[in-house]
Image 1 (cartoon, rainbow, N blue to C red):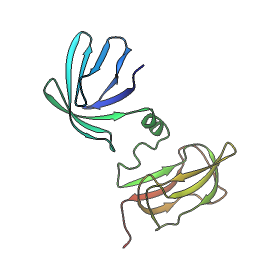
Image 2 (image 1 turned 135 degrees about the vertical axis):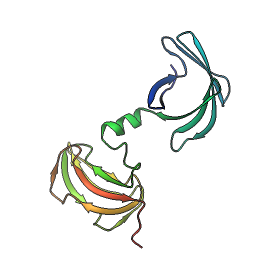
Image 3 (image 1 turned 135 degrees about the horizontal axis):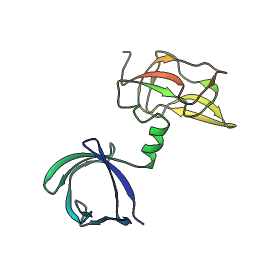
Length: 167
């Protein structure tokens, strides 16, 4: 069975899989830049013009017409489900509780600088301790919880201004 990805082009969603994992869709990789797709008895030649793998974005030509595409996978779907899919897209973002739990420790203070991957908060949920980390760097604008607070799923824990410096 082939690997499946979801591609968004002009706000339309397409699911593409290598091999014959979907009825009515046949994909064949010609080489590292070209893909041939047959869907509903129509033939499409896809050329990857540019790929930015870190952002999962692509500039592709489909039968000679240029498009910008964004690929998503099951990890992106999980982040979207947890409300964490747009955390790095805006200037300021809210760090939200991925599940109901008890705040055991807040590791940052208002005005403090954080780097991507820094530990921000310790949340106990289902008898497990979960360290919530910064998805990007920035300045902590607001701490909305304190030690001992019980929080619900999607509760705002911190507000961080992405990329800001206090210097």
